[in-house]
Amino acid sequence: MAEKTINYNRLKQGGFLRQRQQEDLFSIRLRIVGGQLNAEQLRALADASEKYGRGEVHITARQGLEISYIPFEDADTLLDELEERGVRQGTCGPRVRGIVACQGNRICPRGLIDSEDIAKKIDDRYFARELPGKFKFGVTGCPASCMKAQENDLGVMGGLEPEWVEDNCNYCTLCQTACPADAIRVENKTLHYDREKCILCGQCRMICPKDAWAISKEGYTVYVGGKVGRYPRFGVKLVELIDEETLFNVIERSLEFFNNEADPGERFGDTIQRVGFEEFKTFVLE
Image (tube, rainbow, N blue to C red; front, side):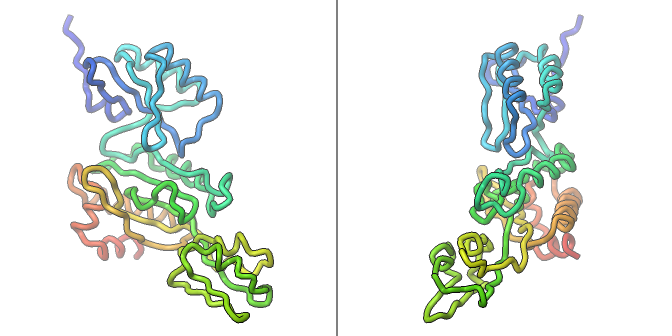
């Protein structure tokens, strides 16, 4: 009987990473959205790693999980058991990867958007979509950018543009102290707000005891073309404070542009640079 040939490219599509120890041992990448797992999923991972591997689970740099030392012959059974308990298979290669996100305004006092909700919606619509190259999303709740929106192919950041309500202000200078961008200056019962300096973090509004800062506009700011690795690139701001419907239109058009214009294996930022940012921006926002 002929020995079965392992199709490594096909396995990589499903999140299988061949280990260096021997050709039939794999590290299996799992689909985790925004780093969120419940207790049952954690128990399932522990059980699977002990039953089929060496009792180890690796946390990746992008909030993913991998169980290593899995013999190829046990992979299907392991995945079936994990799926029954709510843990799904991941992916690698030229396609949309796992979505990373902070906890956003569900947990963090500084969060301006529900990062987990947006990450789940992106995952539901785009996870593992085939593209010319790998594509990574990051969702961060505010301009502190804990999830490094500017280092992803497409980064989503929550933002809030404040509006000063003069009648409520007692000129206590708390907002001036809290502003990380020196966009607010209070002196002689006068307040100066510099919109050009403002980073849209909303700290002035959060700290004000007199409701002297209202919301002028809030939403999602999008960065494109970021990456790390051997040749890192900082993402460029594409659009600021858009609503959710517009956000997903921007995402859809960005992926369409990448699919149409990219060379095989090329990253999104390299495609944008080669074609031209203005041409890309026109295509997405027209």
